[in-house]
Image (cartoon, rainbow, N blue to C red; front, side, top):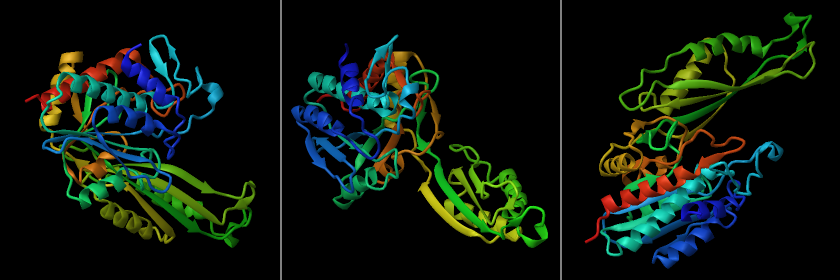
Length: 377
């Protein structure tokens, strides 16, 4: 059993449903302590956060990730128990195998191998790990970044180990992410009998034309880094449960994934104006899950590309797709932020898994990247 697989299995066996860490950071901290890292905990509001740093000189390479995982769904539908970390047919099964305990294990083992070979490396190395990435992300990486910013600590390169790869390990690097903006609109009408619509006011009927226009709107054309802003309706709720009652209110929920071409404030203003044109003045609630960010590919991206080519033969594409990540917080204190990790084809699904070969290959890619950026003196 490889060292990466062994550590990944140990981490998966901790049922760290967000925002609980359940001991994952303790496992990692013990290994980092033996390597000479200084460990700081920034735990808050039930969230566990670790900042571990070795060295004080520039440049600083930071690996960022999260130990929390999403709920398993019906456990009886899993091929193997989701926290048993079972190996079967060349794959490691378990919640968090790909997102992202496998990535953390790959980096820690790569770090151990790198330091054994290059004890007098240049610069410094850090890890920023949290148990609040899959949830609201209010007390995790954001809190650590605020603390580092307050004391003037900055990161030269940040490698976020999120599962960025698609069909094959190494086919995609992410140099930014779209923003996420969610809306909840509640529209009130007048409840009544379906046979007497003149005595009622159906909010669903009033919403329908505006919703059609909302869905058909092209918000922008994107740019060189980001695709056009997209919108998806996630919920439309109304009714009492009876088939002969006109509902008294309806609630619509939708989400934008947007780039800099359409800032959140612009999308809010345009959306509310659209519904107002249809004489709909309901109660709005808006929540920004993060603004878009982009990081110009530089030395970190080049080092990763070379390492990926050496281990897989692939030339990765650059992308800003996918959901949000903690890179949006880290960009405030980092010169270059690049996301690279395992394949994402099973994340958040029943039977989440990762190929054993990918675990070892990822660790080798991370090790080469460390060697390229922090060559020994």
